[in-house]
Figure 1 (spheres, rainbow, N blue to C red):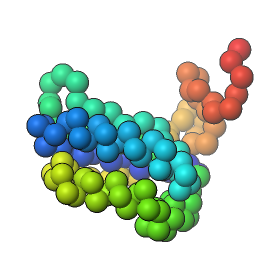
Figure 2 (cartoon, rainbow, N blue to C red):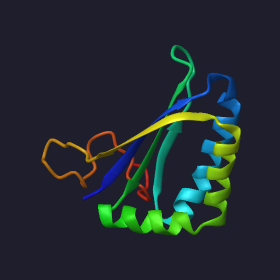
Figure 3 (cartoon, rainbow, N blue to C red):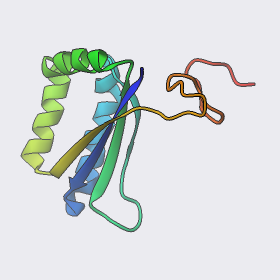
Length: 121
């Protein structure tokens, strides 16, 4: 069963550019460590101190393996260190989610989904 980690960040609104650089680095680090980046979202209008990240894994066991690889990854450690040194993340919340589908199969693509690796049409 696919598990998606939903991360809600409260960021320093005066350090949005630094947070965006931090998030952009994860786009290559996370896949190298075994996760699928569903995306990072930055404040655009309205609330200026909330950002989101979504990362999916084939299972909770795959997530645990990813966490172990991430702890030993130099680029990951450097990115965590950058965020800490810049003090750009004020708070972080994580939720572990599973998809709800009409047929009850959370791993089956639903209408409108982009299936990774599938040819269009």
